Length: 290
Image 1: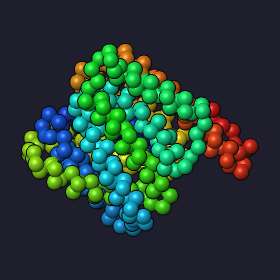
Image 2 (image 1 turned 180 degrees about the vertical axis):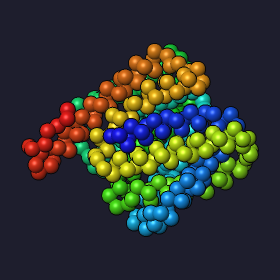
Image 3 (image 1 turned 90 degrees about the vertical axis):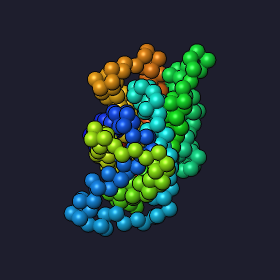
Image 4 (image 1 turned 45 degrees about the vertical axis):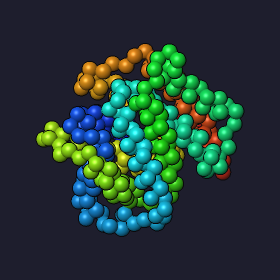
């Protein structure tokens, strides 16, 4: 849980650095440097831990995760530059809902009526934030939702990968594969960063690498459903940092919609945690934290 908390703070910090870096270079270039610079950060650790830490046991999962995560990263980075960080963060809370839907579709999990209703409530929260018909739904908000869907699929793959792969290999091959994917389109609108731009790009790479390493490690230690509520600490983190750095303050609908999505996802998480305990042989001896 502590790893997840620090990861959420690092992810929020990455959002701050993305908005700052976008003032100096195009978004696709930010995606490229986020992955390329991460390779330079991870490299020295490999010499100490050994290259056996990055062995791939199931290469297809690595490739699939890299492609899906790249799409989610590009969409997410773009949305961060187009809408307030708090709104982007609140919409990202739909990712755990997408994770639950994905678990049904791809992992064959069964959900019952109460969790289906919770999913519908969660999407209602997203509609409260977007308010279609009452205000214009921005492209940035739609990109944020699309990014959440992509990241949810990547999360499902990460959880599957932690069964046979190390945390270091999952993070290393993610950036190793995503860097060349981003490099070619980045060349189409290449701009060399200014000194300040380099500072922000390194901030994106460092915070993003820390966040992904801790997130992956946390997923390998406990059930992913028990970690999902921790994602909601990103909202106060985002509100505070965006207010300090950019003077952004979220409107009331973002708070209301975020709270609705939080409640729905917290309920989904609670039901999944209970279900996990019921299928354990000694579930009668385990006290549920709920």
